[in-house]
Picture 1 (cartoon, rainbow, N blue to C red):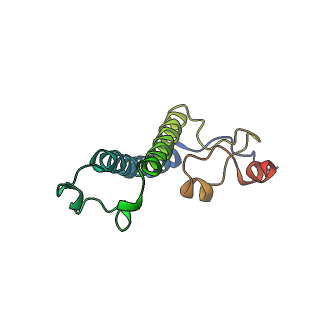
Picture 2: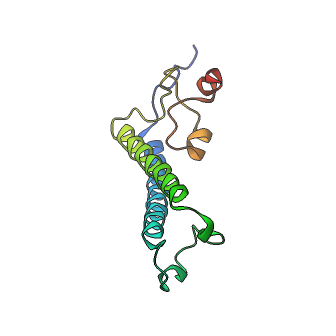
Picture 3: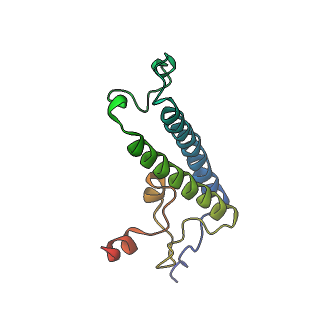
Length: 127
């Protein structure tokens, strides 16, 4: 008798993904805050922008236009939203289900892209 295909991750697996997502979320929020504060410092000729905390935008930060920085911040904000959405799916125990095929997305893919909602199979069909 064939083993029934798994329809959701176990609570232990969900905890592993929650930990991955929460750590990415901390990083993403720090990067977002750096981008926002760098935009507000663009017109400031003080020494604030020489702070060592500006690792995200080192080398060439002065050539990044306000518009490019705003685009990066918007992309980062979207990433944060996707991570938060993934945490909600973990709470609902629907995390890791492909929204096209309904099958579980591979753990390897989710470890790399923890906010993924498409399996590789579904992603390839889109191209």
